[in-house]
Length: 292
Image (cartoon, rainbow, N blue to C red; front, top):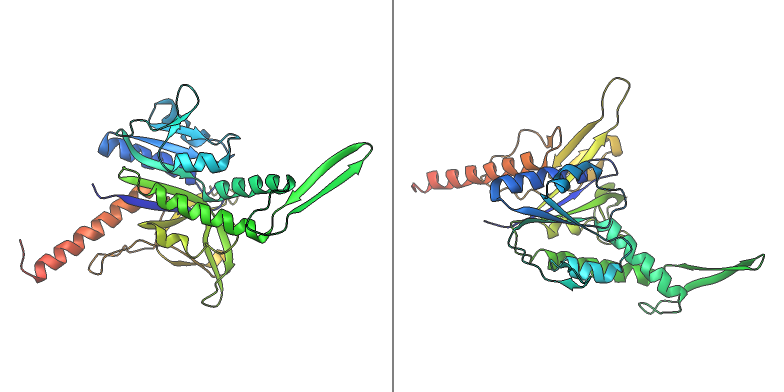
């Protein structure tokens, strides 16, 4: 089965974690395999708890572990053994490796570097931001991040995402929060995945087979909140006509969807729609070349 690498990004409460559950169910139904979720998010796993209870999703949580070591092992497909050591298990029953989220892991890396700066560890050649505050006999050491820290975190995240895509499973999924930044190559604003800082916002979508943005339209009176999944690049009027980044890699002869959204949001519906587009491209080429 051809590997699919997917990036799903959106703001808080857009439904990213719930979509992991939907995709995990689809993977279980179509391949018979489970999902392993490596998560650094602090928002909890309540929306996918039934899948965890059924053993369909196997969660591995950051939970205060060193983020550098955690990510390095997670993106290699490792888990902790009975002795608490990172080891390579039999991953043949894993059909989806999911990582949540780019922003959460990057924040953990930045926090780790702030702590090291407070310990006078120089990172990236930049000067440390560190000072003491003392009052009533209590001393508190304050530290911060310098620009070098951003580059280190972005470089490490890039390396780990690429490594994760080498895992032997038909689906690799990363999530991220959304960033609204100035487009450096065109006028206006862009909505894209948030790693840390602005350097990777426009770059990350090209790392994946597919990039989808998910959003939530808040409830208004009797109207319930709505969750929407965008297909490809799009303009969001509600975000000041910002250009939302997306990537569906539809073949030239593929049948494009009638709309650029799926509502209610469904990553499975999006994947099935794109699979149909690829098949239509094959049929069109076969017809032109008179192939059977």
